[in-house]
Amino acid sequence: MAEEKRLVARLLQGALEAALTDTPVVCLLGARQSGKSTLAKILAPDRDYITLDDQNYLQAATSDPAGFVAQLPAKVTLDEVQRVPELLLAIKRVVDSDRRAGRFLLTGSANLLQLPRLADSLAGRMECLFLQPFTEAEKAGTTGHFLKRLLRGELQEPLSGGKALKRSTIPDRLLMGGYPEPNQRLPIRARQWHRQYIRSIVERDIRDVARIKDSNDVARLLELLALRTAELLNVTSLAGDLHEDRQTIDRHLAILEKLFLIRTLPAWHRNSANRLVKAPKVHLCDTGLAATLADLHADDWNTKRERFGHLLESFVLQQFIAQAGWTDPDLRFWHYRDKDQVEVDCVITRGSEVWGIEIKAAATVNPSDGRGLHRLAEQAKGDFQGGIVLYDGDAVLPLGKSGFLAVPLSRLWEW
Image (cartoon, rainbow, N blue to C red; front, side, top):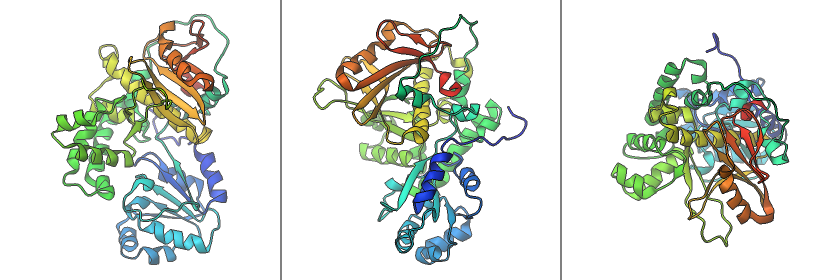
C-alpha cells in the first residue's frame, strides 16, 4: 500500500473535456465513490462547485428548482444531481434560451436516464459519460489501449523465451476492485470499506431512486447476486430463494442497475439463430464488492477456482466497458450461449462487426478453449472480426490453427 494517497489519472478525461467544448450540459454518471467529484474538480477548477449532498443546497433545490437554477453562476458543476431530478427540467429551460457549450457539468450516482421521476430529458442538449471505478490500466499508469489494439487486430507480439512461473496477481486484483478509496488501503481494510459502502448505499442512495418498503431487501438481493455474478439471470430462482414475487425482484434489480452496482449483459444472437439462448447474464460491476459479499479471499484462488472464474469474467467485462468510454462509446457488449451450452464470455459489436473474448483463470491454454469462438464465428459469418482467449499466462500465443490468439490477462493493463 502506498504511504500516501496518490492522484490517479483518469483516462476518460479527454472525452469529458471534448464534450464540454461543444455541449451545453455534460453529465458524468457513475457509482458513488468512483471518483466523479474529483475528476470534475480537476477538470474544471474555474467553475463554481455545488454539491446536493449539502443539506442547505438540497433544501433550496428541492423547494424551488427553477429559482435555484436561475441563481446559478454562468458555469457551474452540480454534484449528485440525482437527488433532485426536477432540476433537469429547469436546466432545460435555461439552456433553451442560452446554448453556450459547457454551461452545466452535472454528476450523478444514479443513472438519470432511467429515473422514473425524470419527467423530460435533455435530448440534444446533454451528453452523458459514464465513469467507471479505477481500471487496472489507470492503476498502472498506462494508456489503456488494449481494446483499441483488439479492434485493430494488433494483439500479436514476438514470442520470447520461457519465463519462471510467478504467483498470479489476479486474485488480489479481483478482491481489491476499482473503487479509489479501498485501493489506498491494506486488503483487510479494503474489505471493511466495501462493507461500509454497501451499508451507506442501503441507508441512503436507494431512497433517492425508489420508494420501497425495506431497502434491506435490495441488499439481500445484491448479496445473492454476488454469489451468481457472470451467470444467466434467473428471476424466478432469485424470487424463490428470497421468498419474494417476480415483480419485486424485477423492481429491485432495476434499482441496483440504476445505482451502477450490477449490469445485465444481453445475449448476442442472429434473428435466424433459433438455437441460441436469449437470457441475459448478470454481473456485479465491481469485483471487490462482489468478493466481500461472497466472502472470497486470495487464499481461495486454488480451492474455489470456479467461483473465481465467474468473478474474473465480471472483472474483464468491467475493464472493457471502461476502456470503451475513451476508445469508442458506440461499442456494444453481449454474451453468447447456445442450447448445446457452448459459450463465449464477452462479445463486442460495432455495427455489424463482431469480436469474441473467452476468459480463463488458468495459466495454460489449449485449442479446445477456442470452441466457443469457433461457434460464434459460424453464427456471425463474414461479420466476425476475430477472437481471443484471455488467460493467466505471460505470452501471446496462437491458439492452434484457428487464427485465434491466447493473450495474457496482464496485457489489459500493461499495454
